[in-house]
Image (cartoon, rainbow, N blue to C red; front, side, top):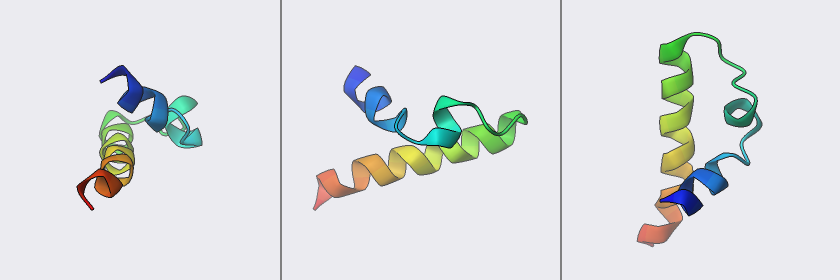
Length: 42
């Protein structure tokens, strides 16, 4: 699980918390996890 968070932190918007609204940040976090985990299923 910690490795997944390390990979997601490579996204600049996640690492710097670019979005100030909670729902926007949660949406970006969800997209980042999808992008990271999608290649694992192929």
